[in-house]
Length: 500
Image (cartoon, rainbow, N blue to C red; front, side):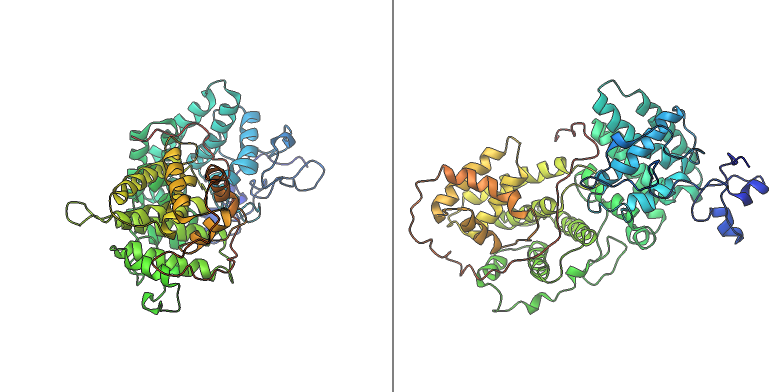
């Protein structure tokens, strides 16, 4: 018998109702508690080749050259668009085999990547989210082709129209698909330089989160949505848009991460005396607390490495905490040293985490400028260079790579290397570990090239024994095992807006 071209499930087709195509059961069948059977199963499983075998990713991404016309869903069990069928199926392939992994490089496994197992099935039953998803793939395709943005403009217009219809219905407005669509549009508009429109989308998604009971309530039922909304809104706006829970886990903000459940009073003389002395110089509680908790967490990682999701949650929470607690210069005395440590910690977390969902270049550029301003103030005080200066400047070198600020950090790092008689990378690494260091597969590869280059120009450094920093011993260091952190290409490949 010739297969039916019907897209809806059997129950919805029988009673002539609209089917939202959710899997494994559509919403109407769940509500009526009846069996949900699709004549043509929506595309939720991994794509297969015409030879019956699963396509194997290369370096986590699937080669687009393996796409073949008609190799996707022959029954078109996805929302209709104004684009030709061949074009839509090519964009679907691109999203499933490329964009999903660029959006979420923390998980390159096709069977667990949240954009494949959570986002995409949702998009198949949500025309607005489906259009937005295709738009990300379409922009990528058109940027590579350099022939204009005709198709993506069609998808953008239709995405906005579909979203406007959804937000008029409160029951549909608070759906995960709606929030996913709005925050993705915010990232797209931000990438195009349309900052006002982007901020308008962020304001809209914040209202939807409020209607859901706060970001913590969203997180309890929709982890991917909550993670993406909190992270991308911060990148787009340049500062956190949601609060965090307090140290007791109370509040409707970003939920407390396990690494924060540490009694700071447990830190004793058994800890590195130099690190404890450094903590004593930090006048802000959040800056001191964050550095202490992170060091404790990174040390524990040598026994139990971070999972990629746990690292993401920790990074998001720490950056929110540190940015939300920046003191008001008008009411608090300024402490350049504390603020240098604050911004170095933020940049350090961005570096070891890598870009996810969207490029973090713009907000990192802002943090680099603030770090430079506070280091300039710190230089005006009378003090000796210490291991903490090596750590701060090492982070500044990596964070400012390929920017006009890079040479500023090079000059300061050369001066510190001469003063502390740093002869090679191992000398620099020893001092960095004295403050904060997470061992990753590419950790040293990220930092070392900068020091190897600048130390060549300091070849006249004396070969005398390096003196111990005046605040205490450098302590002992063990290797810390951690998760692999890789810096992947960003999903939006156009130039991000210049910092205002």
